[in-house]
Amino acid sequence: MEAGTNTWSRARVAALYEIGNTWLHRVHPLTKLAAVLPLSVAGFAGDTIRVPAVLLLAAVITLLVSRLGSIVLKSLRLIAPMTFALFVIHGVVRPYPSEPIASWGPISINAEGLALAGTTAARLAVFVVAVTAAMATVHPKIFATALIQRGVSHKLAYAYLAGAELLPEMRLRAAQILDAQQSRGFDTRGSLPRRFRTLFALLKPLLVSSLIGVEMRTLALESRGFSRVGTRTSAAEVEDRGRVLQRLLLAAAVPLIVLAVVW
Amino acid sequence: MTAIKDALRFKTAFTTAAWVLIPVAIGINLIGRTFTQVLNLPLFLDTIGTTMAAFLAGPWVAAVAGVLTNLVIGLTLEATSIPFGIVNAALGIVAGYMAAHGFLRSTGKVIWLIVALTVTTIITATPIVVLVFEGVSGSGVDAVTGFFVASGQGMVESVIGQQLLTSPGDKVITVLLAFALIKGVPARYRPPFAREVVPF
Image 1 (cartoon, one colour):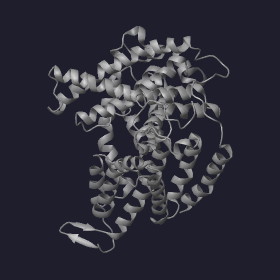
Image 2 (cartoon, chains in turn purple, orange):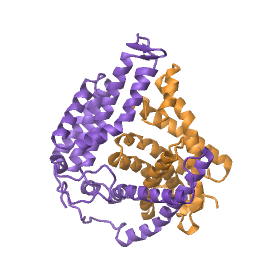
Image 3 (cartoon, chains in turn green, blue):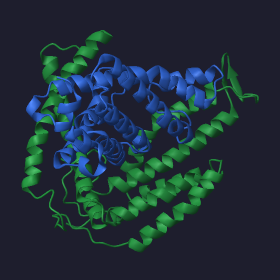
Image 4 (cartoon, helix red, strand yellow):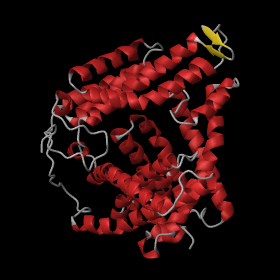
């Protein structure tokens, strides 16, 4: 199956993946991943908000024009609590030697702190938008296949992919156990010791059954030649392209890392 | 003792069962965090899976489980968790090595294990929180950091102070839960490493 097609089901993969066929979906998964590094590091080069703000604006406009506004929303949802905490801690709570720009009783707002909070929030937003855009437009299976094509161990790729597929499954099982235990009278809002007891009661069946399942999965994998040495075929096909661009993107990150460290 | 030696050597640690255990550990790490949110507990419990992997299969398997947890969660749910993969891996290595050297055999030794895990968290997480996130994490513990900052402490001291207050409790519950849950697994399902390091 080609990277970027919209025939992959979302049901068995974690929440980030967006089915679609935009230009970003068609870019090779490792090219997108390679682009994350220079983009993110560039945000840290310089000590003002200018560079990360320009990068963020460019990324958001590109995503909106490409009808990938959902990625912007997802990124904003993720970055919002951190941005709030940054502005409170650096802009309001942290004492500075300079005069505050506004004061209400014990609360004072400082320009220096607001600038630091804004710069940090913009840097983190560039990183979050870049990762979200790269990974929301590639199915984990395609990503794992692309990694194997470039020499990453198929066992490591299996662990990544199985982890990504197991997350929604375990969340579902967790919700079912929570419902079942609540229907038996478990209290999720009682005192702290009671909530700890509830936590153990919730975790035990889930974890014990997961660990018991390890033996079954091991036998299933062994019967499919998991330990066999040599090349293997994959149900998912990814066209091997963009090697030069990927190397250029990674090379571009080197001077940016130096710049970020020097600044 | 062969199982312990195998688990401590990188080349022999990764059996098929160990590779199967890694995704399970990733799922458990996420579930621990989900349940603490549902129950409004002042804990993270996002390293239970890594700790269990350390007690079941040794330090290297736990380290890979730790890094992959943050990579999988970072690349599929929350990008900001990626840098903390280093913390998760370091915890796996420390827990695995200490388990292999008998630190699960008595209450006194378990306390040292918890102290070591707390110190590891502080040493590895503080530089990331300060340099990358300027002291915030976007969770409730930011209020504790804010308290230290407001009292005139520097950002490094504030983050260390916050972790000294929040991390030990988290590690106590993580280790006790991991230990108790492994004891709940019937003996025949426990990997050879766990049979040697976890007393039953």
